[in-house]
Image (tube, rainbow, N blue to C red; front, side, top):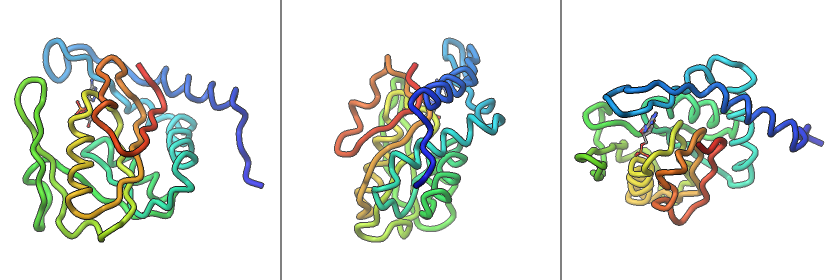
Length: 184
Ligand code: AMP
């Protein structure tokens, strides 16, 4: 039987992850509090726990590819893909991917942004899990889900290390379950 830690052990590991997420005020611009997850990456137990818990949640979903959002999302998505024996698909800001891309534009609170994925990245009906470090307004993850859908992929869920609950970004992520390890 696989080893499963007790609920108390999981709680204490999530507390550890939470305590390692660092607030950096006024970065990248005044008034923004940046949630820096690099201390989580640097802590073996915290980093491994992130991957273990996300893998456990989606282990029975037959994930074929983990779609990672540039750039911090890549770190979690790639490790999770390995753990789930899935592939990895990058989603990047415009102009970064070298081959033919599909692009989705989306609104930000102030302005607009876009994400791109290679057109041939997903096969029809391929089961995809979207992963990023932080869920804020949900615009980026929503646009990524639209990319997955427009390329014929089958979205099985979303995984985040941190969800900024006060922004309620999850309300935009309909049609597939959302798992966030920490809510702030
Ligand atoms: P959003 O589209 O608003 O959900 O923003 C999500 C993307 O922006 C993710 O790729 C995050 O890494 C990044 N992001 C947004 N807000 C923050 C924040 N306060 N701290 C760190 N990263 C953030």
